[in-house]
Amino acid sequence: MAEYQLYCFAQSGNSYRAALMLNLIGADWEPVFVDFFKGGQTRTPQYRTEVNEMGEVPVLVHGAKRLSQSGVILTYLADHSGKFQPQGEDERLEALRWIIFDNQKVNGFLGPFRFLKNFAKPAGDPAVLAFLKGRIDGNLGILDKRLAGRSFMLGEHPTIADLSLCAYLYYPAEEFGFDIAGAHPNISAWLDRIKALPGWKHPYELMPGYPLQL
Ligand SMILES: N[C@@H](CCC(=O)N[C@@H](CS)C(=O)NCC(=O)O)C(=O)O
Image 1 (cartoon, helix red, strand yellow):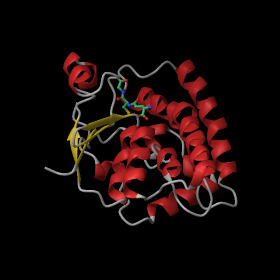
Image 2 (tube, helix red, strand yellow):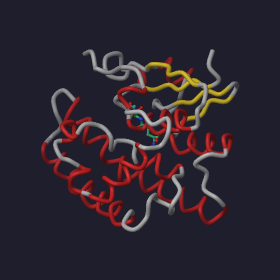
Image 3 (cartoon, protein in one colour):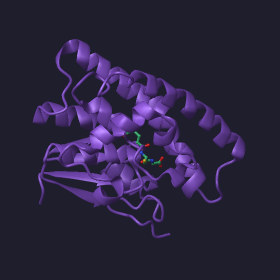
């Protein structure tokens, strides 16, 4: 058995943060496929009792430790590997600030938008999609501005803040119906820099369940 197990599925950008981090730090890890779409596995009492009471992926298992919330998982892996770790109190707080902003407002809106547009049956209400799109555009603008004149979110070195914020941004533009990298040059260059890190893989290569069988 590998040292780490990650409960995840390919379409989950929230899981991608953790899977990408594990790959970039060269961890000995294996995915545990969670059948979110067909089996509704995260909603079963068994999943909520045995895996995660919050009914979510990702969940990281490391020996006796079981962690959920990608921000917690990224922090744990950074502390244990010494890689992608913010340095000193100011950087730690700054990374946390961006991770919370990301969870709530960047990928926190992109994930549901993509789900409602691409996977939900029936597809989401156009008024809901329009609301989310407005929020997404504003928040991606904030991210693009932050990345002007910086290689990564906290400066010249990549940290867990970058690995959190890129969660949904490598999925195909057709799944969103708009081209994030095309519309945001600083985000586009930053995504290329993350992609160049040794061990980078696309979410559909890194996690099980692609293509989706419904
Ligand atoms: N803030 C959480 C979000 C996790 C999350 O929403 N995961 C989705 C899959 S991408 C999920 O498991 N949803 C299950 C559900 O809503 O029933 C994190 O960063 O880990």
